Length: 302
Image 1 (spheres, one colour):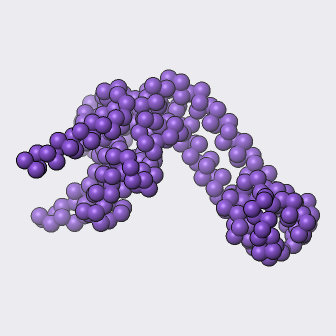
Image 2: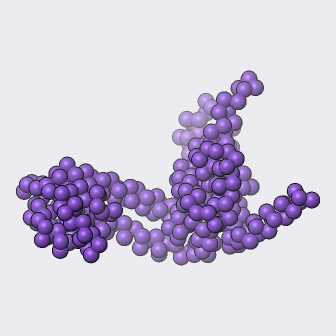
Image 3: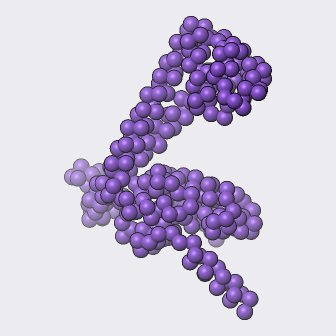
């Protein structure tokens, strides 16, 4: 602390403020040790999933360059069907009609001639060994992810009530609930209002104004982890029509037109709802929104 005070002595900052920042940490960040540990696991899980996706793309690119276009007839080449074909290629280096027929399922066997044209390549000894190395690394990453998820399940027990609260919102899974709680915590006291937490998350419009001219109103940086998570949930909700939040999104999209801006607006609305739920300790209930909408429509008619 003494070194930090010496470094900052030339700055226009009071000593008491520097000490307060050192002791409390960044503004608005939940400082509970359990939350910090939970956040570390959730962020690491996200990075491991990113590594798994990169490894999948690496395997698919290698197969396509060798003449095996599995993705042209299989939606997931790492499913049961794709793994059977890859396992056969590692052993033999190529696949004939009889072997392909044993790997395919009932419906895909009707298109075996077209599929055979997509897997007409040949692997050398080096390529077979390299493909095995790639698949072993992919399997090790999947096993590592399973270990992380077990640890997350164990660490989730103190926040079981809050996870249940957030999971009551349509489009938010248990995994997403854990990731949100890991970022914002369960105590909303550091955030005075919903506007404060939206500003901290980077879901508020910017205010770049100079000489009376507004230059940009794009959202601020904020916390990229919570922002990307909420935007992903917003995309899921936008794909439906029945829930209240989805209907709200489509009504706003008809007015604004811009898809990205409406997704950001829906993500902000989600964060305001989550903030209110965690602060009041309630579950998500769409009926209150519908009742308020109907009362507003009656007021407009009258």
